[in-house]
Length: 532
Image (cartoon, rainbow, N blue to C red):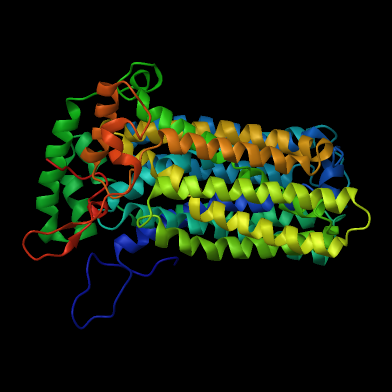
C-alpha cells in the first residue's frame, strides 16, 4: 500500500499517521516529478545508437529534436482538454484520465520497433509509433501540469505559496535526476548498442502514473468543485476528511459565500487574450513569464546536458558523469529556492537570475571557443572552468526561475480566471519549449559553442523585460495584487516603476498584528480563500 491509513487529525495515545494534507503534498509532488523524469530520460536516449538505428535516423538529424519537441505540442492540447474536463466532471476524474493517457503514451514509446534481437523489422513504423507515443504522453503530462496545481491548492489552505510550490518543483528535479541516473546505469551496463539500454528507462516511467492512479481514490474531491456543482453535502464530507468535523461547517460557509461572489463574474478566454479584455494585462505577464523562462535556455540544457559538456571538451562518458553531478547539484540547490522565494520575492529572483545566467553563458562561449578552436590551451582548464560555470548557471536557474513563473499566474488572476490562467500558462510553456528543444540540436550541430552566446543575449532580454513590466506579487494578498492592474489601467502604463509610484517594485514588509505584535505576512493567506 503506497500510503498507510490516515485520519484527519491525530488522537492522543494513538500512533501518528500520515494526514490527508500530507498525502495531497506527496501526491502532487509525485505528479510533478513525472515531468522531470521525461527530461532526464530523453537526454541519454538521444545518443543511444540502438535507438537511432531503430528510428532510422542519424545522431545529427533534426528528427532527433522533433521527437523530443512534439511532446510539448501534446502538452498544450492536454492542458486545454484537462482544464475543460476538470471543470465539467471534477478534478479527480480529469487527473485520472491524464494518468491513463500518460501510461498509454509511455507504452507506445516502449514498444516502438521492439524485436527480440534489437534489429528494426518495423521500418518507418517505429518512428511513427515513437512520435505518436511522445504526443500522447505529452497530452497526459500537460493535463497533469494544468490540473494538479489547481487540485492541490483547492485542497490546501495554509502555508506560504512560494515555499510550497518550490518544494514541489524540487521533486520535479528529483524526477529528472532519477531518470538520468537510471539511464546512465543501464547504458554503462548494457552499452549504447543495446535496445534495453533505452527501453528500460522508458518503461520505468510507468511507475509514476501507476502509483498515482492507485492512490488518488484516497484523496477527496475538491470542495470548491462540489460547491460549483451544487453538491454541498459532498463538499462538507471532503472538508471533514481534510480538516475535521469541527472546522468543516465554517469552511463550507466560507467557500459557499466565495462561490456566490465569483458566480457574478464570468471570465472567458476572450477576456484574457484580446487586447482591452479585463484580464489581458495579467495574461501577458503569465505568457511572457513562460517565454522568458524558455529564453533562459534551460529547457535545452535539461534535455541535451551531455552534448553541452561535450562542447566543453569532455569525452562522451565523462560528459555523462559530469551531467549526473550537475543534476545532483541542481536538486540540492532547489532547497535554497524554497528558502528564498518568499523572502526575496519573485521579481528580484528573476532579475538577478537573468543577470547571472547571461554572465554564465557568456563565459561558456569563451570556454567553448578555447576548447574547440585554440590548440595551445589545456583542455583540462576549459573543462574545469566550463563545468563550474555550468553548475553555477544550473543552480541560478533552479533558485531564480524554475518555480517563479508557475507561481505568478496563481497570484495575479481572480478566482474566476485562475483555472484558465493555469491552462494558458501550460500552453505557452508547451509551445515555447517545443520551439527551443526543436532548434537546439540544429544549433548544436551548426553554431557549436556560439549557442551559449545566443542564450546570453536571450537571458539579458528576459531580465530587462522582467525589470520593466513584472510586478512583485509575493507577500501580498490577492486584492493587493489586483490593485496593480487596476492602477496600471488608470495610469495607462504597464511599467512597474510608474504604477502607483513604484509600489510593486519590491516585496512589502511584514505588518504587525495589532493585538499581539506578531509578524503576520500576507503570504500565508489562503490561495483560493475568500477575503471579503
